[in-house]
Length: 146
Image (cartoon, rainbow, N blue to C red; front, side, top):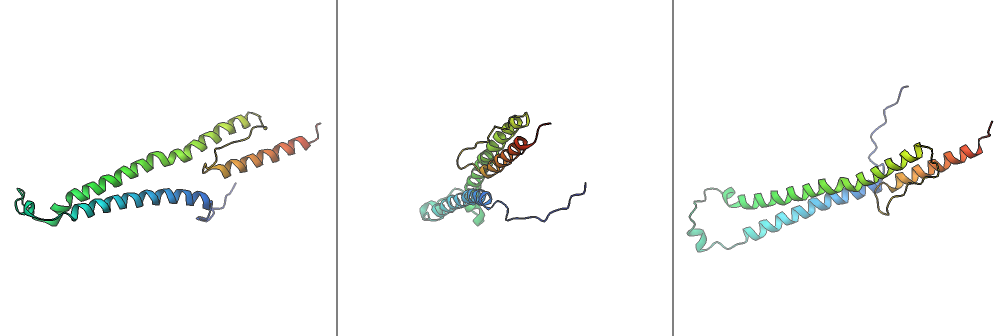
């Protein structure tokens, strides 16, 4: 068989894309705000006697900003790690559930209905599979025996 290659369609499943985009951008926004707040509070400290009496010689601005850069990097790393840990679970859980239900359907149970929790990102996929099963069941029931 020869399959035609389809163009990349970025408009597919807009609700799922929006759900994913909101979570990723939200994480980026939160980590950026936290890093900016750290930078603001660190940089707004008043330079007084402690600056002049410092035991360390500061040669470059980067020496002053190193703690801020490290703190911002840590916040970004932490938020990115949390996103990487928990976001796939929101997708992997429903995929696992659909796979398990499809095994039962494959075994011959055409009465099985795939049920996902409200708000699961793959709920539309489960509904499409359920509609397909209903269609196949009706075709099988109408088929003359013989």
